[in-house]
Amino acid sequence: MDPYADRPVEKPAILASRNENTLPRPAPPPPPPKMPPIESAVDSNMSTMTNGTGTSRRGKGEMKVNNRTYQRLMLLGKGGSSRVYKVMTDAGKFFALKKVTFHKEDGEAAIAGYKGEIQLLNKLAHVERVIKLWDSEINDRKQCLLMLMECGETDLAKLLSEKNNARDARLDIHFVRYYWKEMLECVKAVHEVNIIHSDLKPANFLLVQGRLKLIDFGIANAIQDDTVNVHRESQVGTVNYMAPETLQDVNRQSGRGGAKLHKLGAPSDVWSLGCILYQMIYGKTPFAHVTSIFDKVKAITNPEYPVEYPPTGIGGAPVPLSAIQCMRACLRREKERRPTINELLSDEDRFMNPDHVTEGMADISADTIRALIKNAADYCSQPGNEPPNDEQLNKWAAQTFIQLQKQMYDGRAGCYSR
Image (cartoon, rainbow, N blue to C red; front, side):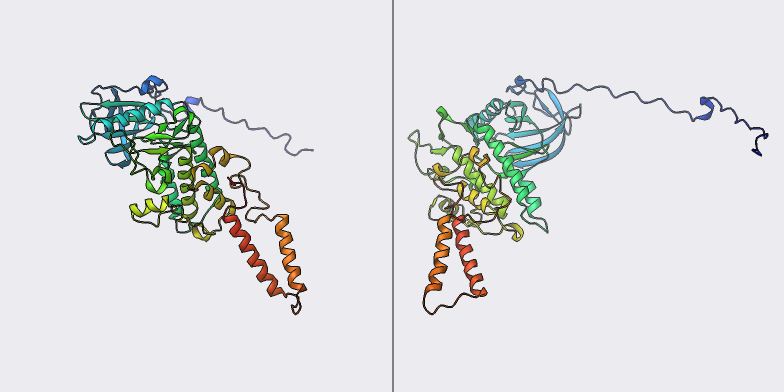
């Protein structure tokens, strides 16, 4: 029997009402008022230039473009007469605002150049790999230009600087391959609409939500008649990344009022990409050691001036042979022999799609194997020669591998055979 069966059960006290048992809570604050987004932010008409007077700032830290006010947050970069600021709308959206101040010595040609850049960005508005231009205004009275653009997190130049200047910096080939592909996708996107950038360098690749996008089309131009060459009357690039053909005509006259003639085409962009790849692997551009601009131009345009491709990169890490082949192909002085962007992105490209079994190994043909066997047989058949010992075999193997490796470096084996 249960000894506690007859014990009366105590009933719990009835809980007081909720109002008496809980602390009073303040009423939740009303939701913040909805702020209107940028008017017509996705309207292609928003980037139309005007000659109004709405570029004046209203109060400290405020900037206006076409009568729309933005809060200036910080300076992102500057160069020459231009400044780029990070700005914010009342709705909390972030943009990059580029302000260019004109000077008397700039003249109409400079202003026309900026207008051309705006027109080109409008043409590329549908290209995802190009930074978006949301709005722009040229103020003739204040002699300045304002361009409201998509804002990124950082550019490739800063990313490479932080990575390569770290105390334990070491070549990470997976990092290189990822951003190499990102750059190729950017350039492919503009080439497909017949645009040559002409000034590719790490600072002109902006990282936006994990993807690279192209910026600064100040000296870009359209390919005429679907050909690969564009003749420009002016060219200002970055010498460390400029192709030989863009430098060889500096002193040649076009016959039109003494203007200089420059040849720009898709192969020139490929050369610039090769210079960036070289920098990602070795920590410097191919001709960075030539300090004089005059000597640098001579070195770049001289077919007899060699480009060195050491077997080790940043931090002493080994450089895959496929990477050296890729750089060699992009940095051929003969522009017709450089690979196209599509070839560099193809499944057959060994650097982009390495064979994990053979990566870093030399190609050996049947003729090469036959020659090796014949050499060994001839040695053993000669009177007085003793069979090679292990030390001799190791020496022969090392010498043979060095020769095969040099053959790969020279580009006589591999996928870039043009």
